[in-house]
Length: 559
Image (cartoon, rainbow, N blue to C red):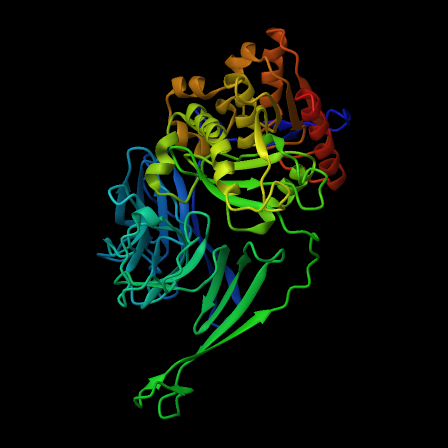
């Protein structure tokens, strides 16, 4: 494919290979490279060996993991991502009688799912003593779990998102808890957060330790968006929550008694105890100077996790009785917007202070609620993701009323203005842009105006590994999920925004939709951005885009 710069026609287009859905796939190979040394320990060249596996049936290398003292592990997938194999790579210095050739592979485990298999970063991996830790899409338990030598050991309802470290005693992982599925019972009868598990759900990315009997030890106490790095007795935890504008980081070190020495502490019965020293690490980053005015709720039949952002106390709209609604979703597979992370709501607060009640709802297909929830959008992303945004709108008024119960008076700063459901608009980028354009095309009675940034309007123009995971290989599914054919339906104001330099969702997506709208005689606004890639990387352009979208929506809703 070729990405050009129309503002500078003297510059040649930039060519690159792009594995487009339903067409020839990437040709994936893997090479084992070994440094060679002579008898004097001097560099003597590089030995190259192609690694072999069934590349015809398993086109993708999804993961490579090489633990000290063990052979490398590969995770390979078929094109539809419905089957995978965990392989070990033979490293022998040379082939000999009865041994496997160097670079050959052995199948250790195989997995299958009728729709797709999730990849959990950090798996597969060997424990130091040689046990194999793998990911499992457990559809019966509706949980993304871990196995050791094929045996599930993480509890139901604990969605493993990433493996951070593997030892002989435990696995350190990032998880999202699904309370309604939680099958874990702590040995002492208390929850892992000592009876205070509120908020540790799909909105919170928690770091926990799982032992191989399935016991859970949290490494993070507050709900938030966390990760960690561990080596030996040292642990560094970092991330964000709703309490601070800055990211936070701490270093903890567990001091164990040395054989023959005194214990740092004594538990009272003469046995040795451990002591943990926790040190916060300073962060001198700038702060935005405000805290988002966010209320969290569950909306509609599907109990959608939702963030409602109201004007701040010093906004001229703070005491408004009613405000137009701005839907601000991503809404697509593999990514959430409703997270306990203050930074997620900074730009939403700007929109709220411009006179909108901002609503972000995570619908079906977004992560954190189990593999069945994720797969609700299989071959039907368009209808399902739009239906959930419409569901959120229909449930909004009653939810706001319930949230307002208990506030003092109408002028109370904690009171949320009522939503004006006759004036609902939507903005979004990438999949959120697709959803915004789709909303004014297919739900014009609910969403009255939209700004769609870099929308993937025709999924046959997107890549193989992402798109075919959710839409499969049937061309009819791509026709159903495209919005190009919906162009004649447009009866609401729509602004398309796209960067000419976008090499992820190319500008061809918006150009094709615009062309179809022109052919149908449907007026619309198109804002092309020179030199801008998939995300707006120029701060001046980003700022001006906000004001242009605001003014467009105000005019469209007659505000």
